[in-house]
Length: 175
Image 1 (cartoon, rainbow, N blue to C red):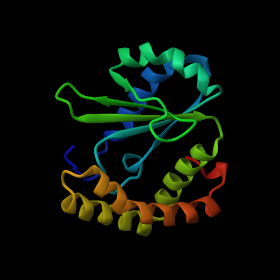
Image 2: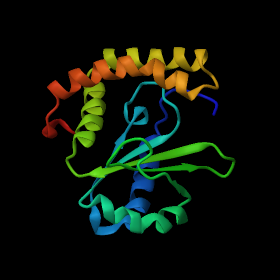
Image 3: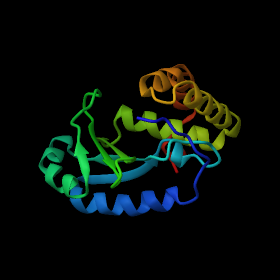
Image 4: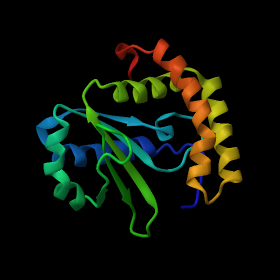
């Protein structure tokens, strides 16, 4: 997988809106909320052009009955994919370029809190967001074809920001 980070694209939010509606129809009444997360949800920073959706559901086990519907939306069903209690889906476009990730957790879980706190913190702390943006650009140059190297290079920074964000964040700050 080629690692590419690009300037913020003003269409990312509308792409999230469009996809969240399609996903909500498939997942039905189990959905509590759908959030735009990841770097595409943070204005003014570079990001891999992959829209990340965080879906909160009432019952995570019911998602296994939705696999065919998600496949009909061209998602690959990945199960927990390394994070217990999560359901993960990924989608590529017609030429095989990754376009979307969906992370689904039980509503109000610690994983939901972690993702929302990070996003919200970065949105109101532009200096930290710019540091993250520069780090991602450097790592994309250093590891242009190595997603593991790229991810490992971000890990320490993300953990540092997450610690700050979790102390700072309360649900009423969520956007």
